[in-house]
Length: 80
Image (cartoon, rainbow, N blue to C red; front, side):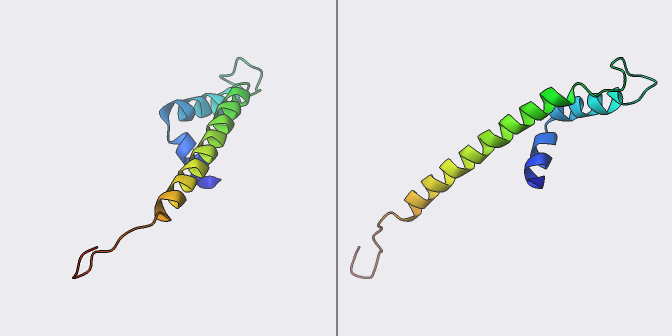
């Protein structure tokens, strides 16, 4: 989970919206009454991306397992 969050917030757009959400909590500059309203859409986007990454990783793992378990022929002194 921490690695996934690191990858999500290494994207410039996600980091930008995180900073906007933090600034929405500062009373002197907020127009939302101190409520970070941007966090709901940001969390939705990051959760959807995380779920997508999990499915891609599982698909890649299955593909790797199939490829690694394929029968092979070894080259010896007399041939294959």
